[in-house]
Image (spheres, rainbow, N blue to C red):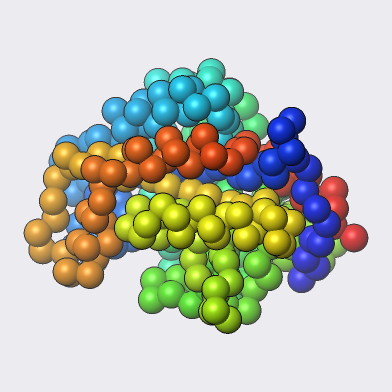
Length: 296
């Protein structure tokens, strides 16, 4: 793995341009509930992803930022109008796979099939090439290094599918913290979600539950560390359901999953507005192109 090691471009005001991304899935499709909500019941449940995506789009428009929407093919097929709004407003439409199956549950052939099905749907609806991919639940790790080889063969320019931490649901602690080429001889670039180093420990600092549950000051400190001390762009993500405090509750999910999923939903939108105004943000495809140009 060859890691990138150069200072990234800055915005007009001198700020490092970070990657802003949204993992588009509905409240019942998350990894925390995968053992208590069966896929075959999804069509019978209340879908809230379209309205939540519109809330996110309005937030981005007010902040004047562009982002990447890593979207499930399942969602795109059912809500094509919101996919077109994402593209029309200047954001990137990228793949999150078809139905949130973790890559570690697939083999190379079924993974390739999943990629093609999702990409075909997204491109047909969005009318633009899909060049980026994020694995559901950051499920590319030491158990399935072949996944990057499949992505390279399928012609993806970049992936943002690795979380270089130890976590009970995912993680590849030994992976590089910043952009690297996972397949020798391929232009594919992997851009891991952001982590930070505090007191000799590596922590998740790229958004999601970390950002929603913990104080804003911790996220700000982590992004500043990555931008200023390490000279790197941060990669931040969240989900549309995280701005929806009125979503249904899953009473039979494990307590830990419920705490992770529902804590501070009411405060998430305000925190996101603050984050969007304090740092410089851009699409992941633009960040990937800059990072790829720096690879030795």
